[in-house]
Image: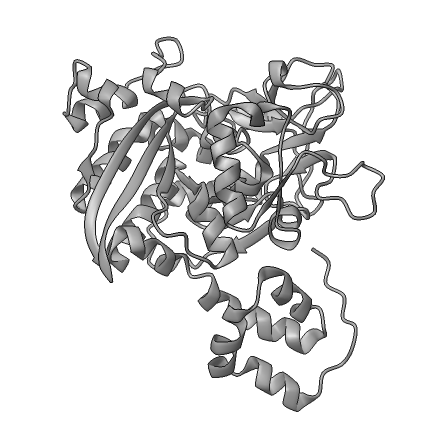
Length: 407
């Protein structure tokens, strides 16, 4: 978001606002909207707020609730870098909003071929497998390792849709593994982690783009946290819905839960001509100017060199080279969309994207839907060189060949 500096601040005022002791007491009492307003007062307050950000948005501290120690947190984030795993759902919302919802889960979205690696990590730090009734009745019973190995071995041609997914009404999900752990946090509490294994022909990002509303379209990768609709979510405290899928019982429960947390739910984001819309129509990229991106401290996180080299070569993190389109009419081309066609009518807000197979990265790229016959894609940043996405489909650069065996 653009920062405008309106009035100068006295040097004494700037000193007060930038003093860490005062900032640590004052700033946590402010909402996201209030912090943003403060940062716009002048350059001094902008610098003061920016200096406070690392302590306010400390992902290591945020994850410690579920992972216990800094060593475990850094190990998990290293696995995120290797596997492309993201954290989303209410935990990502709480991270951006600097709040805490008692009893909320940690939702971990994992490419299914990496389900074993992530699942065994949680088992290693004391979590226990909590099978659903359907999982208990299956051939694998309560054997967590066999469930994880089964998910990791799924292929696009041989995928077996998990029956337990029907209760969640999730698309692009291959299976869900629940973990629990008893801890003492003031009173005794049960921590719950949901490992959500994504279909082999899909990616974790597709699940985020199919959530029930814009409210929870936030995600945490190993190096950055992204909020896709920050203006609606944190300034207007509103979640924009997609189509009439809100009539489903499972979605209605989710809406009610967030309304109890002082959010509003809206099917009307205001027309494209509005001067103050909840969202902007058109093509979007992860981390673009409409997003809120927080760079995370990666000190101590073991990031594979091929991930670093690929990001350097692309000029952007791989997630930021992907995107979606926000529309209020059906696209001419076949597309993946939220909501599903049966829940959509023209005029509703619609998210669309394409899944473009990338054999080198062994996962599809999520790209804005294009009505252009040429179907060519450019990097989402003008500062990056204008390379076609089709270039990523080749192994002409040695960095990409590493992903075949390592990613």
